[in-house]
View 1 (spheres, rainbow, N blue to C red):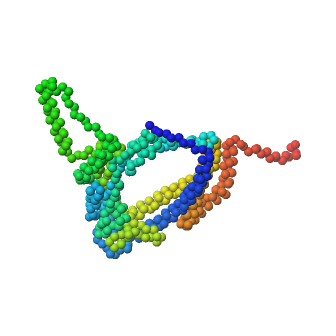
View 2: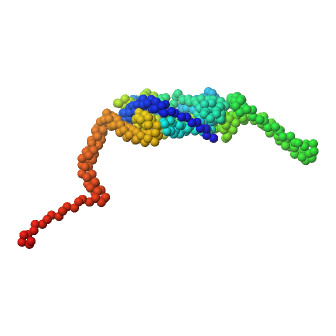
View 3: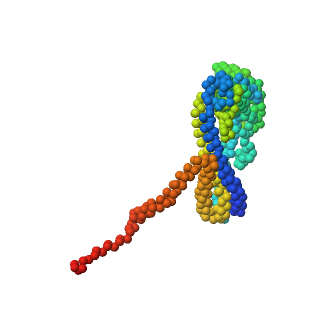
Length: 466
């Protein structure tokens, strides 16, 4: 069941907060403006760098053999990334010969979700109703349930044990006859599940510790008592024989249970170590640890040869570039993909910057509608108007900043676009006047307004005919 909390903010407090928000609005407006300016420069510099790299790289035909003539050259080549390093997760004692091994930890917890709805009241008060709901989910960090709003869910969370995420990389990764730098190694993404093979001693110790934590939170699990026959004294000979056979079967099962190595609170299967009673039916506090490894794979590199390794390419404008992609790719494919990514980020950051500018303007002028909150109907109308005006001004301001940035970073293109825009304005502002008059005249005629009839010209009468 959802839990609700209602809070009321007085008119004076709201007005005071709105005036404080002016400063935050100014900061957001300036930050959005700076982001728009910086983003245009970043995109232009990156595009020029990619154009320069696209015309400078050479294909490395045989990475398995060092070529001294390529030293200092920007190359593009494909080969297997391999390693002989053995990596070990020291906490669990498992490892593999791999480029990287990773441990990811998840906890089954109660999670608090909230949603709020605010309502303006006559006189300027604001009543906010916040609804809290709760659900069990796998999360990356334990959640402190003592801070939950609903008392029924407070202190409902616990964890059977805690571990940290961990990641290790091989120091020596070969690419043909060359070695990969650390940054290139971290770009390899050939993930595979890593089989868990933890020692029995460690599992038994972990199972024992987990049992203590489980029983501390959930209580001692009740043991089932064997059911004794109620009337053994009057059983027939055949019934006694059946009872004896059942007892023999039960004794054998008990003996097998005492000798089996399966643990009650720790389960390992494939790449997952599950800490909890029933993996298919998780309880709050259960922990799931997943192991992965990065295995050798075919990769394509575009970077500058530096002896037996690689370094980033430095363009004339100072931008640096190197990349590693999975599989076999040509240099042109890599450059095209990087340009597409650059363009995508250009538009993402443009949109973010425009929203920051608009939000900043709304924050600056929000006090106007807040002052009028004594009459919510009027305040809503004024607030809507302020929102529209701030949106229009924010978009216009953002376009001006982008245009000025283009003048600074792309003067030829910007001047061309401004010339086209000026021509269109001239056409619509001057040449369009006559067109508008014609359209207005046609509209009046369609509406039934006909021009007044002109008197017919009088013909000169011949005096002899009078």
